[in-house]
Image 1: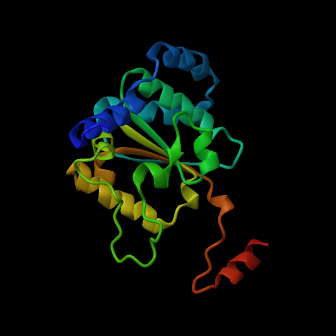
Image 2: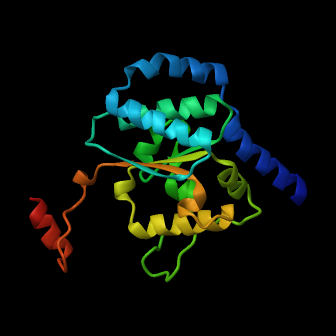
Image 3: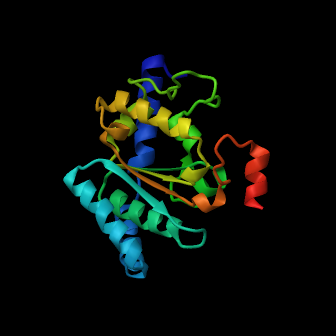
Length: 205
């Protein structure tokens, strides 16, 4: 059995290796084949994300498009490009099904340790300690891709924002990390001021 210090080192190396053990040649070959298939709008997003990565600019980019418009395809090409250049690019999704479709994807709750109860905690924070392996990965990451963001409660985003600001020592939005959000708000219920859930369902019909 590993000692506590060795166990910590083992866990850290495993967490980091997970994000850095991709085959660069394979990924860049994937990019070469897929880049020409991006449409005009996708190319614009693709170039902007890569520009921010090269300039080390933070900020958020939101990809809003209906289902079936190849948002996941674009994310996977970007992931391959960034990881192929030996950078850490994290990929999460609000739902498990969506996470499976992203290369190296995990659920947002798993990767970011988002609390289950977001409503009753006054100021919720993610369960990630500064000296933990997850914290190190989040500090070193170039970009975070988050699919199905429209399915996440707003308190979830606020919680991740607070956590990243703390872990990265940066008070900019999301701790200065480039965050690419993707989703389709057409899948959500309409907003009815002071309306009940039943009212929203009726309006949707």
